[in-house]
Image (tube, rainbow, N blue to C red; front, side, top):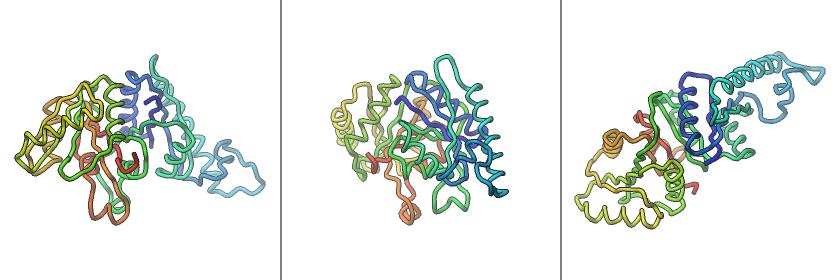
Length: 283
């Protein structure tokens, strides 16, 4: 976990995400890159990069985009100066293609271990079928995505991992990512299963077996009986003063997303605690 990416639209929310990423980067000894995705094609960006016309025929749109690119570049450089610390270097990048294509294009060309993004917890009518920005990243990226709403956060001493071992299947690779994060942060992992059955002893045994297979050491397990897993998980995380919630999701797009809105997507919209989602369909 040496490279953390933070998409920005220059909003206060994205600045909160950047501040959280920096708090993560210090114990991880990671670098932070702030990325602004320009709404221009990903092809020839020479005009936008230079801010000047390279050809004899330049449209008004091209000139406007060039001016906007220059203005955004100045904002990015200011963010580097404002947020870099003695222990964490913040750099900035601009990439074309719009939000999702821009981020995927950047990750394809640059080593990236994690994305941190601010979210309002709301979804516009335009995003109803495609998902909000956080959901789009969870669906398409092969790396963990952390969403954060609240500007108040604290050192991550305790992490809550929510599982559904009755209905979901998990791979050792997915748990390996969880292990890496917990060990890097030096956090205690609370492995929680929210169940609808009353066989707590069996569930506890399964959770301990999963932890041993994953090679976890600093952990504890618990089983909660509740018909509302989202509410139960949030209540448990708040009660333990957790600094992070981890969810192993299998986010889907298109019609499947509409039919079966993922647990992770719902959780990111309700949680005041940062939520790290690993799309287990990609690991």
